[in-house]
Length: 457
Image (cartoon, rainbow, N blue to C red; front, side, top):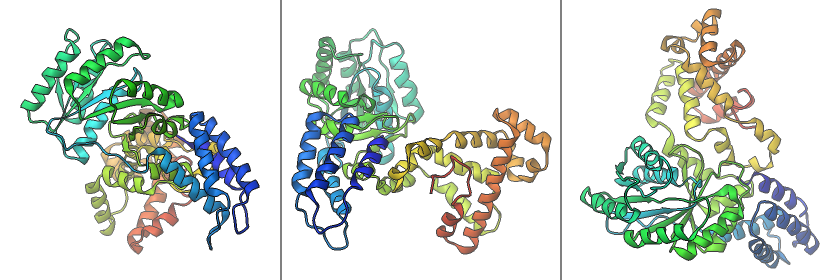
């Protein structure tokens, strides 16, 4: 999300050069580019007008602080306005109500509401250590209840049964009693979506909300619908006392208009971002971090939090001890490292949070994807435990390579690439073990891995 907007804003800021003050002609020229970039990103026109006007008022005549360039001063103004536009700070869930805290999920069909309900449950279990129950009131969409049940069982939460023959309000009342009896901390209610907003849908969800008396009513919306997402959220907000928004599919080709419009239009905070299909792919929305990403400065804090949350610390410690003992870095270790990257969202997710990525052309970014990662893992999975422990068995045997290539659905050339990659990683790990420095590893990584395995320099 925001790739095109980031690149256009980066180009626009280059107009600002030299002088002790921000010059009016340069500001107007830059703001024209900013305005067009925001409109192309599908930000609502009313939001764009107010945003540009506010920046112009703050930038005109702004003195350039010593050691700062006009670009840096203007960037700071734009950053502050973006943060204000998106809500100043993260607004968390209210979990202080009497258990079970009831969270009602609302939204149109296809917005990812059911998957998001499961993601939210996993987040509450892992981050807040809450016991969570979920129930579906979607008695209309085929297999909707089964879909939620499958997701809930996968994450180890409690699923409260419901049937298409029951009334939604009756389902809610039964679920609340059951969650209370089981002493659950949180009850998440997944509601039915429709292909479009209609009176019957609104009437039903109002009755559900009245029966549930939820602490949180979260509107789930597809970010790829642009400013239409904000307009739909406004309609829901008029009908229900929404407490927050969850933007889904932000890892796709969304232009960012929803994220920049929705708070201003509804007055309600974005609380979470859906950043992938997996149930762990849910992030807290931090306006200041998102502003930094939009302006090409990365989001290192979120990256650190993601590493803390998703990296298998036990495996990391075992690898560190193994290297310290001089036991070497084998293909099992390489497989663990590649799988860990995929768990963290893959290269696209990592690159999105690294500073300076906004300056890299989209054509270059497009070449950096997870296909190489996925193929390498498939190749390593097709090897035996003994082969992964002793890479020479594969390297010196054409028949073994052919067997592995067939099992992974690839060719021998790609087997050789993985073996070469392992050889390079092994050398780097020896340097790290010998010198004890991560800086040594990072220097070694530069230009060593094949395309798709590391971000461009």
